[in-house]
Amino acid sequence: MLPKKGNLSKIDKARESDPEFKRLRKMHSAVESGINALEVHGLDRCPDHGINGFKNYVALGVLAYNVHRFGALLMKQDLKRQMRERKQAA
Image (cartoon, rainbow, N blue to C red):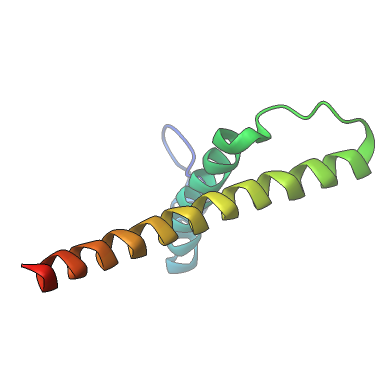
């Protein structure tokens, strides 16, 4: 759902001014963000061959991303706990 470049025909202008098109265009940036996150966590190249290897590799990339996010949440909770303990000790 990307807009066309340059001068638009009346049909294209009507299509791009449609609320559904605008909603889907906003969703596109979220998809790009998700793709970038997977690439950062090891999914930038797929050394496996075939569709099954590709599916396994994508699954591992998603798992790595989720483990990373889970670890960040645990670290944040631990930091909050330490701050509470420091306040109580003081």
